[in-house]
Amino acid sequence: MSARPPVPLSEVVAALDARYPPSWAEDWDAVGLVVGDPSTAVRRVHFAVDPVAAVVAEAVSAGADVVVTHHPLFLRPVHGVPATTAKGRLVHELIGHGVALYVAHTNADVANPGVSDALAAALGVIAVRPLGGGVQDPLDKIVTFVPHADTGRVVDSLAAAGAGQIGDYSRCAWMSEGTGTFLPGDGATPVIGRAGRVEVVPETRVEMVLPRSRRSAVLAALRATHPYEEPAYDVLMLAPLPGPRGLGRVGELSDPMTLREFTAAAAAALPRTAWGVRAAGDPARPVRRVAVCGGAGADLAGEAAAADADVLLTADLRHHPVLDAVTEWDLAFIDAAHWATEWPWLPAAARQLTSDLADTVTATVSTILTDPWTVSERP
Ligand SMILES: [Zn+2]
Image (spheres, protein in one colour):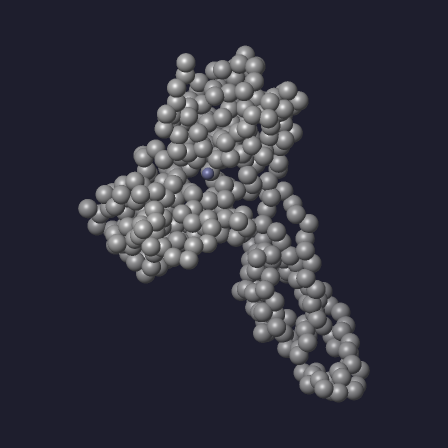
């Protein structure tokens, strides 16, 4: 038994949220803490692709306090969780055994490192970058005008609300001196000047960048700290710039091989499934540049072709788009089981979490095959 003191679930959730911010998830997705009391003590975390009964039983027998799954338990709203339904029963099982459930789905897909980084690493793909160039978190810039004496206080307050963070530098601001002027109306109660008289005030123009997700918090901080009754400010939306996050990855094989050889290598590298691994394209074509996307990544075929990839390895591919892309773009495909393309993320995420929490928790990884395909026959 571990002698380590347990950590509260809230700390585990905070560590996972920091790696996989829920704000990165697609609008339709359902991520974060699904079941669990944040004050519960956690010693062991169990990682799995799918929140199904067999995985919960596996977690319980492993002595886990939290199950982290890639796929959501609930993607559509429900009005209840009666144990007469499969998902309701699962919630009862979890609560009955004191086990929490946390989901990191499309937010783990776009994270860096994320699901496709683990897939690329499992396949020996190196020099990996996001397909399509990747993105960074959307940024705003706030510009406001503050009487000299209050400038430091306002900058402090905006920084505390999330503005002015640039890399490892915090409280970053640009300040320039200028002159503000205004005519307070009859109903106004100005801090400086009086109603009905034009006022001229030396002011500092303050500019700070902020994550768009912090916009309302930063504006609330501005209104709370700016001395004026009606502070003047602009919020500018900054142009999106390339960054480290995004769906899919593209990189290189250190030793080029044929499509047939790479398909065999992928089958050996990924966990075994009934679905297996199959390829579309000339089996003898050379493969050097490889695009990958854990889960359903067919939509990335155009970006894979634009990145000059020789092959896109993903899951849930369909006949017509594959036929068209193989013919028109000279892009080969490798179609693996959805579950198998996402499984490599589990040990990677488990290692990250234990390291983020300074080994105060232990992590286990599910070995239960939850891909829905169970039989494969060839004539
Ligand atoms: Zn998936």
